Image (cartoon, rainbow over the protein chains, first blue to last red):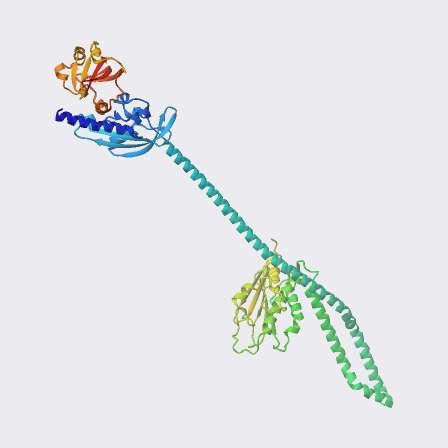
Length: 476
Length: 116
């Protein structure tokens, strides 16, 4: 055997190994000439197309291997063999290929090969395609993807449901908290209303009971005065006509101090009349204040209600063991009759004025360090260190009036001020305050009368309550 | 496997070409010369690929090498419709029937190339 024969045999052995090895792999391998005609393929490619290599050689690969993407036939110009030959670049994509009745998913990698020294122009350039059946993997991945998407969808749905549930729970919690607040307020109003109702009934009953005997007294005072005057005139007549009475009359006159009696009896009767008038006035104020039969809106004079309230509180304005007399300044404007619930409005005046008096009672007079109040109450005239309550009324406009009740007491901190309208909040010692007065007042002014109730206060500078209510009832 | 021998094949009055184990043409008959235009002097000693279209060369070389090494073939002993190249370069459709037999421990190939 010559050397060249030996070399040829070695080359054939190598080619044989290549041929066998390339057919032993799972992937389909095919290469073409520069025209896209099949020049070689391995066994798996033959099996993929169901034809022996002999019948495939020389045919166009794009004809033998029609490919699909997204349910559309891939045009010849986009076939991998063309992409390799035209772009001269490598690439890899998934394609679908119909084998008998089933579609396979093929992962096709393409490459361009150019060998300059091969014989013929057609042989110089080749497209080499490696095809791998990834149908199962892609279906599995697709299924996995679907499962993942389904799971994500379910997670999203459940998350959304959870969010919705949380939001509902949050709303429910807020609603319950709101209900609790309303319930506390309602409870406070009910308790207070019941108390005020009982108190009103008591006051009205006492006023009624007192009114009758006072009427007896007051009614009989004038005849009594007439009778007394008549008797005094008669005595005077006797004294004129009998200047020298008997010793027994003289002695009796001396014993009763007739001369003083004649002078003092008219004064005494005047004093009794004055007292009876005052009792009648107080009874009238009590009835006016209680007005239990006047829960409905009616046209009233606000100033009358304020005066009645002040009269009832008169005893507390006088000097006490720990404080001097308080000064009350009535700075009343010209107000029309106001459509309101007078009984309830009187309760508000009572609450605010009582609190003002409470505040002034704790004012430890004299307090030289106490600064002069400079709240917007410039109409006030202050005596330094004297407890003073000012009640100012005025028209805001034709529809609204304003009642400002201010004191020069110790004032409130911002923290206290924030809570004064809360039910059950009180700064007074146990048993002295219910914590309901301002809450009820707020409810009466804001909710019942559709008005406004504001509080301005600074520690050491007094407190001012501003009530604004419409002159006529506002319907909502 | 056909029992037809190369000698029997040569008896047929169709173009015939015989090649040795290296794939070199060693014999052609008159019909071959007539149909394909190659003279014996021109074709004998040439590789078989000279008779095959270019797109057939790679596959032929690899298959020939494999057969030489393993003795396994898919093309022997049954008629195949292929193309053969005449001397003027024309591709002639023809039915090929290829057989192989060992003579003196070397493969010898013979094929009929019946024009269609």
